[in-house]
Image 1 (tube, rainbow, N blue to C red):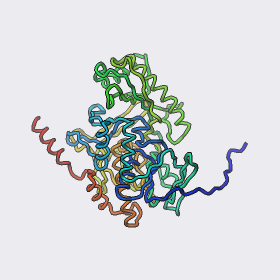
Image 2 (image 1 turned 90 degrees about the vertical axis):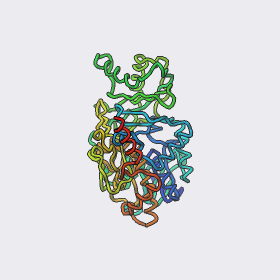
Image 3 (image 1 turned 45 degrees about the vertical axis):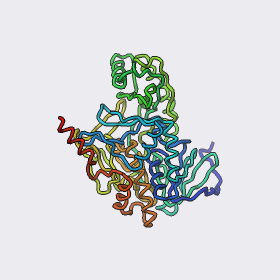
Image 4 (image 1 turned 30 degrees about the vertical axis):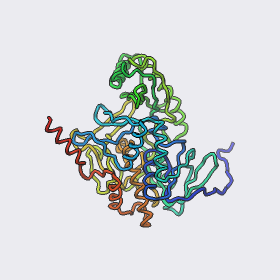
Length: 460
């Protein structure tokens, strides 16, 4: 039996031509498309699901992480710009919770309603003139020379089609477009462990009280007593927009040898779905039996897909590092800031490492981290941008992806206006446009942070 099949050559029809094509509708791609559209560019976003939002929707995360930082002891939202518009739209739809303290009360996160977010994301992009193509998976690229992508090849129910653009933005999460185009990338020897999220409904919130503080303690005690075994420590079980519903992040997915699953391997993804569902129901059974307020609860939703935290990461001219995060480093080519700590999903546990308490609380994100080597008309945004593994474990969350996306979409306009490679644009002009659009670049402390810090110190 032969191990390969020869397919006949075929002509692939070109279905459209654009200034910018964004592949992937997660937070990086979402914001990149909105920014490109806002700059007046004809923009197409290609998404394999029937909705946008990435891990927040298809991964069931239902929470924005990384929008805030603890700046000189004051919790403030530091990711701004188009993010303001998106959150305002969610708030108008009564779909946005107030920020809550997370990670041992060290930083804020913000929950949202998943179903409403799907609609709000549609409206957000359509408002900015972006064309959306759902149920379509990028399958290959067609190069225009060695250092330029000419088109992306897409597979869908309509068959195999090509879409041309002047600039491409890879928001696939796995650096698919970059890898196919020959961009250098790396894969960690041991990846961050994936999870499968689920949501619990029917909770008696009054009886549950602050269950998010006690569920983990009860699981740990059960393990110590030898009655139960759970896949990881530090479970996160918290109320949603309406407190009869709670989100649950308690699983950790591995192969038969205990190694993290690889999100670029379909066999690993298949295994992840199966064991993720098994772990979800096992953990839920324990919670329902042992936590007051959950006696009549049930799993209302398992995330549509395993939540992958890391696969390929491109190697750009600079890789954001763990030390950059912990030292709150400045960069001359800043495109925004990251306030989320190092969040390492290691075997059986989640390890957090924060910048020193009481300090500035955020690092700059350099433009160079979204510019790949070799290909001159491509940006890479999101978890697959140019970062070391532990730098990525911080900046991969929503806030950092929003920052990268808005910068890429805005920079695309500058590259097209000036006719240069994306790595050769005038970064000061990019920064001017970002700031004029409300983006906080972190080059000084916001006046309200300074004022609140002084008030807090005086009260003490």
